[in-house]
Amino acid sequence: MLSTYPNTAGNTRISVTAPGDGRALGTLPSHGPDHVRAAVAALRSAQTSWRAMGVVRRVYWLTRFREWLSGNEEMLVELLASETGKSVAAALRELRLGIDVIDYHRTHGADFLGAPWQRTHGNPSVALQLAITYRPCAVVGVLSPWTYPLASTLLDAVPALMAGSAVLVKPSAVTPLTVRAAVDGWAGLGAPPVLEFAVGPEAGPAVVDTVDYVHFTGSPETGKIVALRAAARLVPCRLGLGGKSSAIVLADADIGAAAAGIALGGLTDAGQSCHSVERVFVEAPVYDEFVDRLVTEVAAFGAADPASSR
Image 1 (cartoon, rainbow, N blue to C red):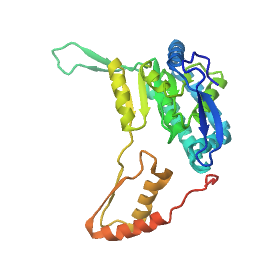
Image 2: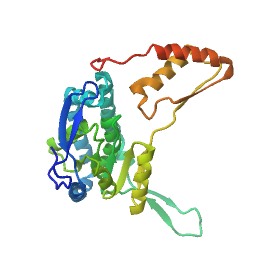
Image 3: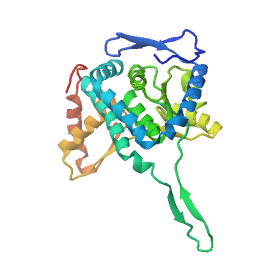
Image 4: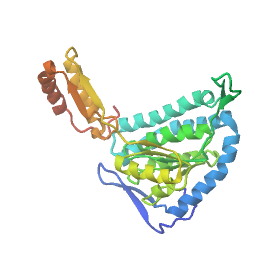
């Protein structure tokens, strides 16, 4: 367990249970502000050499991490399915999405972080040359949700690591175990100590108050608080606050296919996904037919078997 820093939360523990059957899956310490501050200080110190090693060496470590994730697929999928209540198949898809993120950034990272882009000023009377280059923030905080704890964490942490930042991840206290396992896996490789973990009700605000850039995925209500705290420190933040995904059904559509696709889009993951279909706009001539077909499709849905591998 990555609990080598002071913890003002004392002996407070977080108990994680499986939503499917109530099994106890594990406990871990609830980290306080002192723990977070110490972790960020250590990350900031380690980030200097991480940035200096260059893109090629950072790709090497991300590739090693990818191999670890693939090599520990069974353990990670079982843990992710247990703590989120997802089916095995859904948990496997989430893990593979995280691996795809690493593949994308290790393939394109050198291009994204290439030489500064230069141009001559557009006004011929001004003897200026503009150069645009990118500098990594020293420590990036990633606050991820319980719906896709592993994929959301990797979607934000991997590009930050690729850019040369150190990362402190703070998952939901409801689903922290798979993220902690991944961070432990990074450390177990002997990789540079630029990826750390914190969890608990006090950890989230402390992360926002301490890091140099904030990635937050969660509810609009919490997102407003994160934005205000980040703004008070004049540090950038990126907020993923869900959406109101819409579907449009036109009169010439295949009504059966539209109803099946929209039912799936609205009910997958019990609708607890930021891209779930939440509203449907239907042209008047096919409205009644579409509603009838949609009701049939929705009625056919049932709870997935969590042990299903399909």
